[in-house]
Length: 439
Image 1 (cartoon, helix red, strand yellow):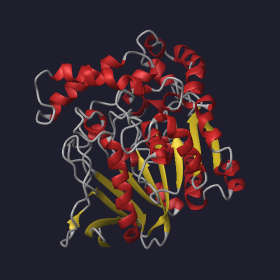
Image 2 (cartoon, helix red, strand yellow; image 1 turned 60 degrees about the vertical axis):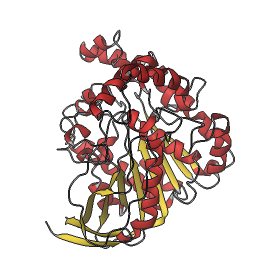
Image 3 (spheres, one colour; image 1 turned 90 degrees about the vertical axis):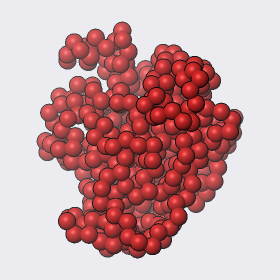
């Protein structure tokens, strides 16, 4: 495969060219000691090979694997995981930049997974896409003592955005036109970035996909479970020093600590960015911060018709419905309407539409109803990901698509979805009338 030496400010990067696209994978954007804030990496003068996929953070298997198939499980896992990948058109010039933050309940996933390859989005949309890997679970969201740097995973994401500002022009991207987008926990990350300190100038547009906004902005935010989870984590480790034990020991303690979060949807996110811990403001300041963001950031918020169904299917007393076949799954989809609305849908999104009230032209909300005819849980959580990323082969092991991943209707819907996302990256909502027929 032909190579290209990209002369970036961080130093020369030896990328690959394939079918008119530049691929630079596994680029280190920062480094960090365990439980510490990320630090900039010194520039280099010798070419660095960026042709191979980088690692994911150590993690447990995805709890949504029964719908999405394997993703980060196919990558190496390492605590030295602060890497990103860039996909750009050859000869791109001032192209919009889209920075992707993956989901996975802050417990699993990785930006280097083949399922997040952005070739089609880049080629069709004339954009530069950056996919980011950040620390997860106890490594990213549980500082074991006051001396540690909290919200390390969110700090990683900000460090990646700083790298983009400095280096993306070398790939033909426009650092003054950066859209951050993410799904599920990645969507929650985007929300956090909108209110975080020290992000001015790092992002200009935002897409929040199926984020658990009802938990983050609702009456019972999950921040209340942080203390019992931290205490349970300490109990699980006993006398062991969390700074020196191996990562496998930390993951075992993490699993035991997660049980202290209790039950329900809020307990499914035992590790997440905590309000009031730098770089996030206290929860009481979020509405003002969001209103400030509304004056400068175009925002697209999406959710799926059956977003809540997968989480109901994981509950012990409801999992039998999923196993019953088509009839039981239709029941799951029907009873998911309430949780979907409260956690992901219109009720959950209301604080955002309120924050954007003075700038209604800068926000759009869209429900994704698409699902293949044999999809087991309809338009479920994650259903739009194969429409944006990867190839039919990458998603062939995803049960949520049934047998329909490669059929023409699905692929046509994928092209339309990618067109909407790219149009938003190019123009925000200044051309709202052009977006409406595609949504």
